[in-house]
Structures are given as C-alpha cells and as structure tokens.
Length: 59
Image (cartoon, rainbow, N blue to C red; front, side):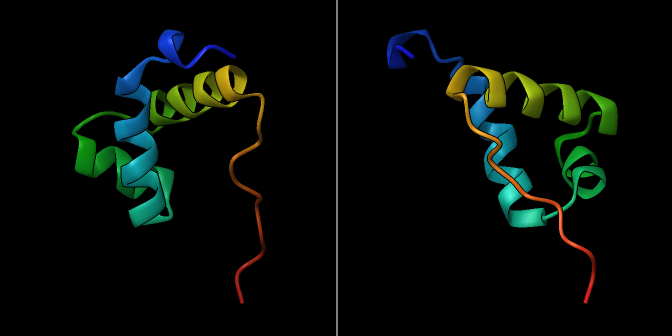
C-alpha cells in the first residue's frame, strides 16, 4: 500500500470510531448514517489490508 494513495478523509472516521467505540455513536458525531461509517471502515480495512477492529461480546 502506498501511503500517498490513502484517502485521509477515511482517517477522520477512524479517529471518531476509536473514541466512540461504536459505529452508531460515531455516525451521530460525524452527522452521517451508521451504514456510511461501516462502508468507510470497510474501505479503510481494504486499503490498509488490516481488520483494524475485532468484535467482542460485552462484559
């Protein structure tokens, strides 16, 4: 992956996701929809070839 090809707008969503720990809350904070945040995360995963997050059960 060439860092010069990375869409830096995707990193804004990643930053909010890291802070909020929820796609729904991140979407609310970014004033967009949850599916849009999920699509952005999918694009970032693809560009970086990394899962970025792992789902865990609560508790």
